[in-house]
Image (tube, rainbow, N blue to C red; front, side, top):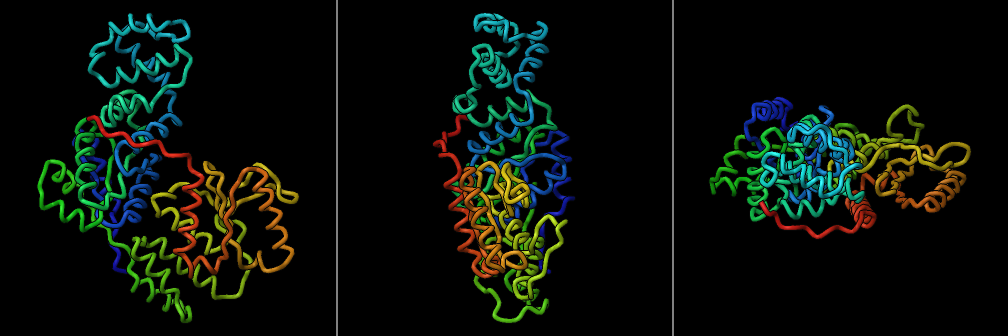
Length: 403
């Protein structure tokens, strides 16, 4: 098929180096869509979440949120202090800030160890019964000490992996790579990677540095399914002309993984044949829905956001409402209409009643015809990206790295 994607063996080798405490950066050279799928898929098999960011500052914020969802950081801080200060387990409910300062005099390297700085702030927030200000601490420490500190506080098995993306200019790639190099040296066991276009990477190789040497050791070249290969597959499937040329070109130019290409061929074939009911046990009710989900999983702003066919907290008719694709954190729903279930006036009326129920419960719903997804893909993805951006909280201004 002409597709060369990173094998698990390569990423396993990187993992082995990290276990040996050898600083390692996985450099996924090629389109972000391919690198993102490869990195997330490899880590998901190991039950490790992936944090994706355009720089280490934004990644560190999301990394903390992912950790905080899995770990009781207060318990971790108490255990760390008890071990280092040899004072038994401190109880923040029985302490004052003065007590904490007295306790801290017995903590080794309290003024230089980022783990100590983080543990102190967590305990102080608990004593004052106020939220832990992770954003303020990130600004104060910088992303590298911030991440190194939390990695010293919690078990390595609970560390999320980090992937930097959207480094589409050399003046963004080189600083990002330098940050990862410093982080890899501080915390060599932390899984870190970067996606970089081939042209940017090849240009950076001409300026050798220690960071670039690490990237070359961890280099993995990614090449997706080409427009020509996808076109030939569609024709071989017996799909009549005209083929959706614009959608094919858009998919190939963004980086097309084999599984997304498979889903697209099925979706196009489905759109050209008579409608039939889908297997109710299938995770997706149509090939178009499956393809759209796979494509969203390949895009940086939407990877990991949507879940297929999830029940909601309200009823539609005499059973729980169910969304085709749901982004629960954004309360954003995508409905894919077409085929067997959307060809009659009564179903049209049911859909409108369902839309009203969505609105009453605070959801924003986007509806697309299944046949439009395979021919008007770029416009549909643009609509989805706009909705995702508008449903996300207002972004906090980025802070320059201090380390």
